[in-house]
Amino acid sequence: MKAAIVQYPPVFLDLERTLEHAVRHIEEAAGLGAELIVFPEAWFPGYPIWVQRARPEGDLDMVVALVSRLQDNAVDLASDDLAPVRAAAREHGVVVVAAHQEIDRAHSGTIFNSVAIIDADGTILNNHRKVMPTLGERMVWGFGDASTIRVVETAVGRVGALLCWENLMPLARYALYAQMPEIYVAPTADVGEGWQASMQHIARESCAYVLAGSTSWRLGDLPDDVPFRDRLVDDEEAWISPGEAVVYEPFGPAIAGPMRRERGLLVAELDLEKCRLPRSWFDVTGHYARPDLFRLEVDTAPQSPVRFSAG
Image (cartoon, rainbow, N blue to C red; front, side, top):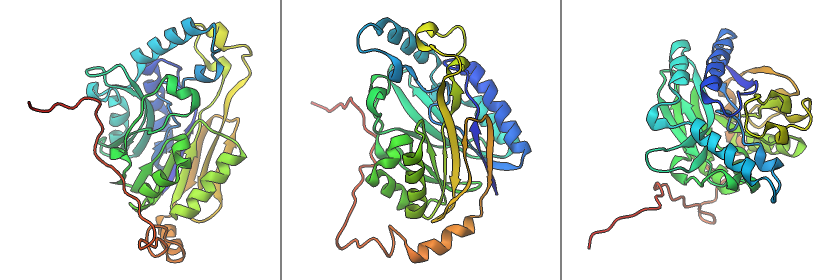
């Protein structure tokens, strides 16, 4: 089975055009024989890069304008905003992991960093909201819960996903491992030797294929109509992120990538039978677990800030 990680930039803060690009990338990947297609963290409609560039004093007007644009262009699942992606998955018979910024306009103005697993028939099997935004991301994103830390059965196998530095949280990882993923997806904005080392470690711990991808884009990729573009872009050629899409095999090395400072698709062959043998050596939630000594409890109830009671 072939998998592809998308390493093209989105159309920053423009959901409609980003969706159009996504459909083209899905078509391209399917044409190469990919049955699983993964998009990087917050790709719909672009990671909020201002959290790394805004000054604590003096940039409030810029941040307000950018967050307002993001609210208008975030994904609302209740309005079926991912319909074009779902339709493309169904048309090409592929599974799509779509990392997006999500808003529930009917109940909240809060934006979440989310990842949807879409099956080959276009059904959204799971939508997970990042439980712990990192550093400046807390200016933009709310906190998810553990109700969606799930591995789901898809047309290509058992797939689970955590976002960026959630993958550095041992207990969150363990909650996925206990559900026996065959394909572990880690959409991210992180890059570098430390991130790559973590991905290989997770491939050893999980005995699953690990697919990780970050957007490869430059400041010059930001559209001209982005609010306060002149403050965000001081060098058109400067990299926001070089990408680094990578695929690690179970308990093993990278079999594709890291793909740096390139645009395109990283394609790899996955043989899910390779998940079986390593678990006979090291099954972190099975024979290696020692439940007599260690135990993890996960609250899988959806969390709500509002609770009504009678009386």
